Image (cartoon, rainbow, N blue to C red):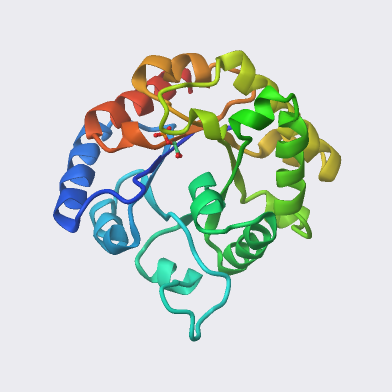
Length: 254
Ligand code: PGA
């Protein structure tokens, strides 16, 4: 029903020459992938390089962030049109590192989401709870609020283009993965919100990725869960070998 979507978030890694090498290698290792949707999200500086190299393949390119204004005196920011002009078609919005270190809030996430949809970029909106929140039993409250606030005033039609990524913050870059059951529980809960905010069709169509220490060893188990439709991969996407193994695990389940 839903195609699996595997995205690699390179974060602040890879110079332009390293980016070229990684994409070339990834292309070679994934040329037999048909059903799984593959996305790489390099730093801004390598977007054009990556987009040029993936032409004619099934790999798409995404940015890791954006600003909601179209242009202006916003030093250091880049707009959706600038991202599109590189050939990138996706954009990550509200990654927990952006929320934690760069002051992003549910409100800025919502503004960015609206601007991304308006521009025709495909957004991947990230949500997730901290360890403290999980341990005090408020995961669903926190994630539920993040989802509702991110999606404020997003129409049913626009919503169909949105990908959600559930990333428990305590599992990002820590080597700790949510168990498939823990992740499935939250994914199912998120889908129930989509049913309530939108309708059955949207609830069933929206891809919800899991992120947080996804690697070849745990990909199959996570992706086998009924409401986990993909992965947002950090550390393991920096090497073509491990990222392509995750993609192959997804392809087997497709
Ligand atoms: P990780 O990062 O796979 O290194 O845990 C995931 C992410 O931040 O998207």
